[in-house]
Length: 193
Image 1 (cartoon, rainbow, N blue to C red):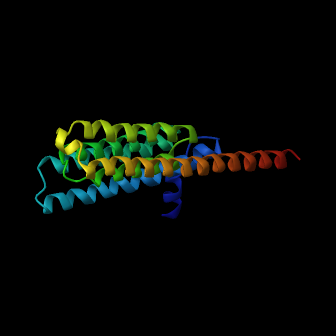
Image 2: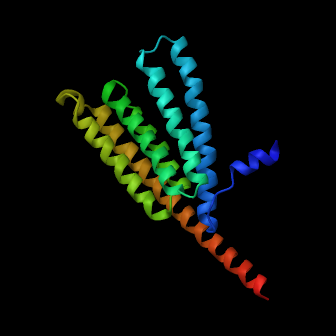
Image 3: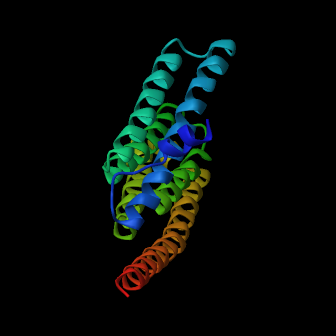
């Protein structure tokens, strides 16, 4: 059984950083798929709108598909699908429920996902998409809501937190990539001698 589970983490790539990120995509994608399935049960028991189980089922399928993409070596594509689904889900909820100004803070999750699933340079793209999405989504609100103190504070504070997470994640991802490259080079040198 353990051998089968370990085989799920086998990523088709010779690059150790891609393998590391691929394993992360498989783990996160599988976990989010299972969570979406559990949320279907919760949504049905809480009398959520009829579309909620359908949306959660589609999200579960998308998350599960990312595991297959990662295992086949298309790690960045799988990571981008996870992050895009996370961003779109959050922004859709923000747009449909403007009475919950804490929702933009959940975009931090997408930024965190970017720090563990993507190459360091793409972390900045995720940050820009999250911050831009938060500002564009709130721009759809009625003027009195859009200019409210609570929403202005939520936009600014969530963007500052996303930026902080992106900086820390970028430095960590860059360091991990360099350490893996150095270890791979040392291993190759040791095999030659």
